[in-house]
Length: 329
Image 1: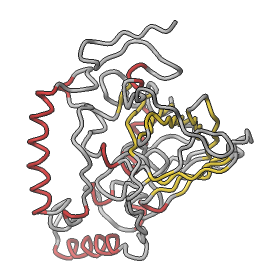
Image 2: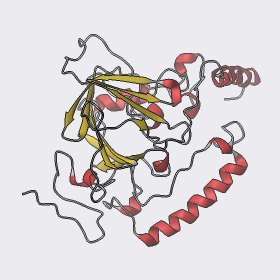
Image 3: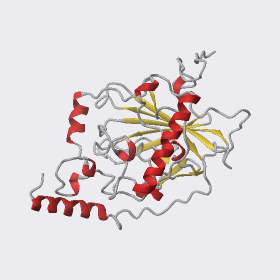
Image 4: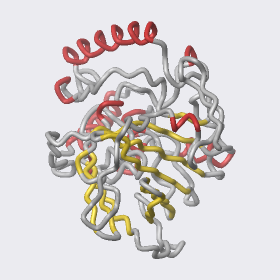
């Protein structure tokens, strides 16, 4: 028998359940009486478009006011909803990122949520401390238009700004627009297509070994398997050039990072997504995010013609040259 201790407001759990942490198990719980549908060949059916839009208002790390609580109270949620509406109106009027950012109508606001952070472990909802190597990697990573360093060439921008990749986890985490995730299954293989930066992952389910350690990829090398009704995807063979935060931002992982993702259908229109980052060369402990993906058959997966329309790099570089000519810092 597995014992799970949950507080009265169902915000904290203290024991692992079914191979996942008790905190992660509280997210997108299985609907009563739900029976997982099957593909014609008998696998759990995850086919469909599952954007992460609904969770876009939830921060990666938990605000301190919530402590170790994964869910806020109804009263706290009411206050938050008013603040969110004010921000929505402001962004509609001013755009996302100010006068030079995206227009406000690009933003996909999703739904207001009571979940206090995407990170569910550690229990405080914060990233573990960086190792010295992780700190060095973070300091050396290009910040692009988000930083204050000179912009002298493409290498000074993030991999996302260069339209190259957001990485495996960064492509799944909810962001303000283009959050579409399209899952297509076949016997012994599954494909995940991401709307932004048009990345795709082809994940074998046939037990084949990972690529040789000498082969490194932005999205890593994924291998999947079924554990009951849960698709478990283990990814290795990463580079050290992309972070594992929103859109591949944050501290770049080390090449030895191991990413374990779990996709579980918990209702007709919900997948519980859990991802654990294990990278002892970067963080002092593993950490986990958990949130629902909502099926939206009507969602449009737009072409992300990023390179064709990527005037941002050119304009930022020319702007930097103009600032230099003016003699401004």
